[in-house]
Structure formats: structure tokens, C-alpha cells
Image 1 (cartoon, rainbow, N blue to C red):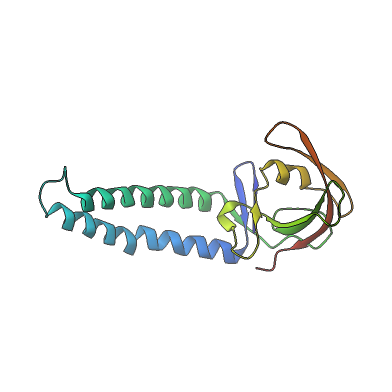
Image 2 (tube, rainbow, N blue to C red; image 1 turned 90 degrees about the vertical axis):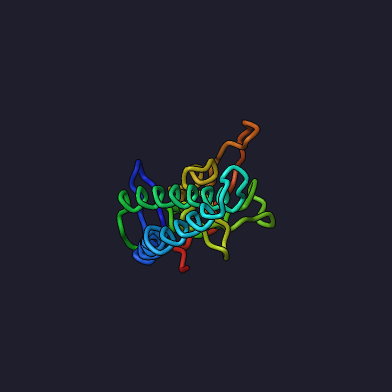
Length: 165
């Protein structure tokens, strides 16, 4: 679970270890592999019309960007525990909301950094309009947030439970 406050990102030990392993793979074996692909493509001759070379260089650029993102994220990370089950919305919690107080029109999502997005539950960033609106609210309270069209929307917090992964 993650929480971004200023430039600090809170991570569980599990999330930190997962991101660190990805960084180590990209910085080591994956970096060596892409260098070999580029060298092999370079040996094919004319680089202006060498699709394999250009694809490998593009892949290398994306990989280096991800290495920089992970490095920065992990440098600013604080490892901590999942939030307490207090009924107060916080990053690292699965939140269930009702739109306009309609208990039939609900949405459940993980309030966390996109770095910790999960396939089993939709993830909203604490910096998103909805994330900012619900963060810090208690179960039963209403929260207001701004829609992309500039209008305001109201949701009711139905449940806030620590994410179990």
C-alpha cells in the first residue's frame, strides 16, 4: 500500500521488496539483455533502415525511464504497516462509496499510488479528485469532489477496510 505525502511514498514491506526486485532486474539482467539486442542489430548494417535497432533503442529508453522512476520512488519511500482498521479513509484502504447517497450505485476501489495498482481491485490515487475528496473521511460521511467538467459530485463513504492484497 502506498501513500504519497509531499514527496514521501509510504509502502508496505511487501510492496517495497517487489519494486526493489523490479529495479534490480531492470538495472542488471534486463539492461545487459537490451545492450546485446542493440549490438546484434547494429551488426546487421545500415542503422537508418534497421527496424530491430530502432525498436531495441526505444525499448532501452523506456527501460531507463522506469529505472529512474523506481529509483526516485524507492529513495523517497518509507516502509510502514497497512493503515489501522478505524473506519477512516486513508491510503492503503479499500473504500466503498455510494454515488449521490444511492446505495445501489456503488464503487469499491483501493486508495493507493498507481505503483501499487492491483488486478483484483481498481486503484485510485490519493491525488486524484475522488481520492482527495474521500481521504480522511469516516464511514457514513459524505465527501465532495470535482468532476472533469468542473461540476461537483457527492459520494457517501460506506466502508473503508485495510487492503489485504
